[in-house]
Length: 294
Image (cartoon, rainbow, N blue to C red; front, side):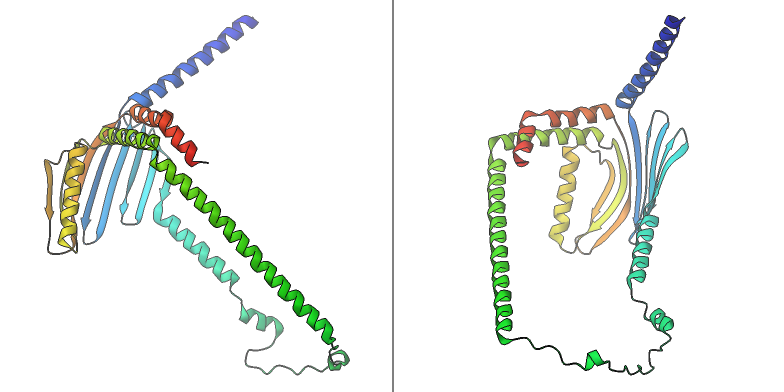
């Protein structure tokens, strides 16, 4: 009987582990899809983004206008997390205003509790016998000793501040020289090239596969507009972003930003994790991080 119970428990544990393993494999190697839509008109930016996995079992949506927005996470269509951007900012401002109001001195309450109005003359206080007594006179030699003690204390404070600032400056210079040596090392250059390669591969993997829209943009200076146009073209060519359905109209005469943009893409979380683990376990990267942490 006990053996049958143990076998049943092992069977249940095995089924649970198998289900968890299958879900993990699905999460890593089943594509996560996303779409994004945005529109810019008269300095008003509206946006709507959606991410979903495995027939919308997990669904994330982010939408709003300018600073007003909302993010919702749904599992099997049931909202499990919701965040309103503007409401949190307003709540923080309300807390700050309440704190300031509490810290502000309430003069009206004080006058009300004391029963004295602000414009009413203050009652004359009768001098007591102790107040009429003259203050005790301090001997001249004692005054000189107090002045000398204060001067010594001031000099010691200045010395402590100087020594402390000097030690901090020496420590900062050592840290700067150490960081400079690490950044100029061949190991750092190899690590930088490797991380750059992995980042480019990662961005190529998660890049949108479909892009369509229309964009009119212009900066205050014509050369700035030309630079931005060049950067956009270089980025599209480097990451192989299709711009065949994208109409870009640079305006070299005035500052403007209007248009709309729709994107659609997909990526595998497993491949993203592989690239991140490659960077994390790279020997040169670990050595550089270790040296910079000293």
